[in-house]
Length: 385
Image 1 (cartoon, helix red, strand yellow):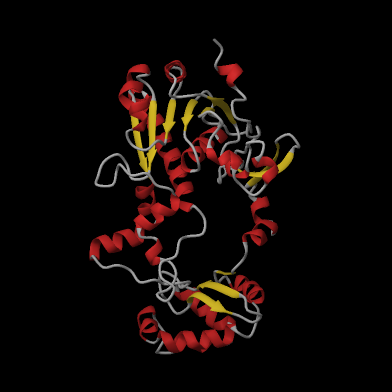
Image 2 (spheres, rainbow, N blue to C red; image 1 turned 180 degrees about the vertical axis):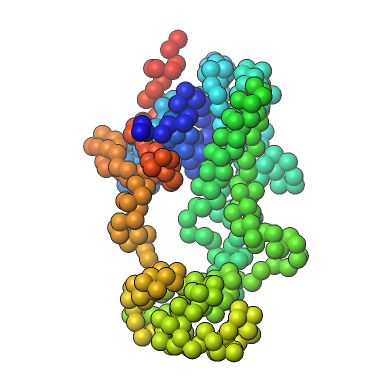
């Protein structure tokens, strides 16, 4: 079976920068779309960032490489009317146009959806912004950590003692990129059904709120904010959450249903606990959870997190020791899933691991094959006079 590239013959004009927008168009490129990335003179800011200075000096920093393989790269001055006209000329040949300017900027530059609809009546136009272009804060710019503050995720993370805590990774950026790629696919399908221009509006705040949908629904319905749970499970069940183990390791456990709870009690050497009147059902367990929790804590402290993970896995009880990312990447599961693929980047051919689409289609995970390009590398191809 041939490699799955369902977006073959789809052309995307990419006027996005940093993480969310470029990650959207990267997903489309991995699925076979031809993505033409347009950057300001000197390239976007992420070209000069990341953990490898030798690549950053070449304008191919890891912060850029992560979501910009597979794309043709143009360097254009969008304050130049001739360059604007060239972008519109390219858009006339495209299927998708993606921008993540602050609301109103695209229109001022001459790339508003009203203009593009006339240039290409079958275009899918995707606008990615912090808050959308309506509402009391729709005009504001933002980055991931700012939206984390706005969305309320910080006030449900951490503990009451430490106060609000930001999620370590820029998850809202990347979730927004995935959400936008999903929205573009919906727009393409609708375009194919109707033959009409499609306007896709994706916001980081919308994405953040839907990424914690259970919290959002609960607070919107009850009007009450949720407490900080620290490392405890959302269920707050005494048989779920984080436990300290021997040698200082942490174990995350999720014995949520009755079978898992019974199996957990058996593994811990006390099968009778599953039938104890204090703990025989979720309701009574919640009423006597402190005592049960203290018993679990004492037993988990007798072995290492790695030992408990192996024991619980054999019993079919969901559990994992708390790992560093480097450990996760070294243990084989990402490799088995073909999640990362290495390409030679830059003048010295630096080996860089880049992500696939993160799912398998007919047994294959579409992957990058063309490394990130220097700024303006494809100007001669696309900007011929």
